[in-house]
Amino acid sequence: MTKTITRLFDNYADAERAIGELERIGVPHRDISLIANNADGAHDHRGEVRSADGRTATDHAAADAGKGAATGGVIGGAGGLLAGLGMLAIPGLGPVVAAGWLASMAVGAVAGAAAGGATGGLVGALKHSGESYKDAHVYAEGVRRGGALVSAKVDDRLVAQTETALEGFNAVTAARRGEAYRQQGWQGFDDSATAYTGDQVIRERTLYSA
Image 1 (cartoon, rainbow, N blue to C red):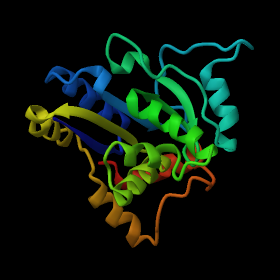
Image 2: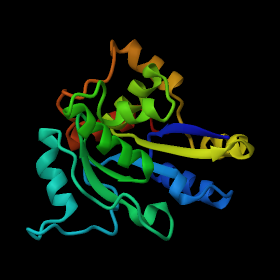
Image 3: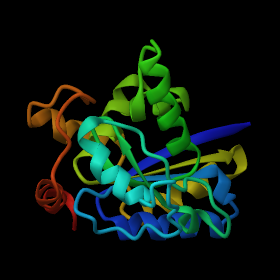
């Protein structure tokens, strides 16, 4: 049996280190996902591809983020998860760096919602992977506000090690961050809301980063 474990990181470097530790303890990189806000252009996005018009995925993501469009990028990749980072634009989040199965699901959920599905984007992908409606909204909001989301599908024998590995790099649970958001009057993630600007995500990160 497998279990999906998801955590939010306020510091992108912490998310990178956590992913490295997950791979070190034996979680295949194909079973790990990263979706991190990149509105400020701060994160490395290696391995970009160019479309027929010569533009990179970053170019498309920056142009399409305001329209809530899903943009093609490298979301698989060999040689470790971080080697396959690409750029996407997901409704409500704006430009993100992303890799792995959750990113692929989020893009698919966007298409499904456009075709009449109930829930699209990152919230839909998180719910499909086993997160509760409540937690999915918190995690999506966390990315919207500048965070990095790491999600791993692990065998039961690795669940405890995975949780310990993530917690060792300042991971934040949905329960903890959701309480903080609700104290500010937040009620839920809205994928039709305007994505945060680079300056806004920088300010938001300073509220929680150690």
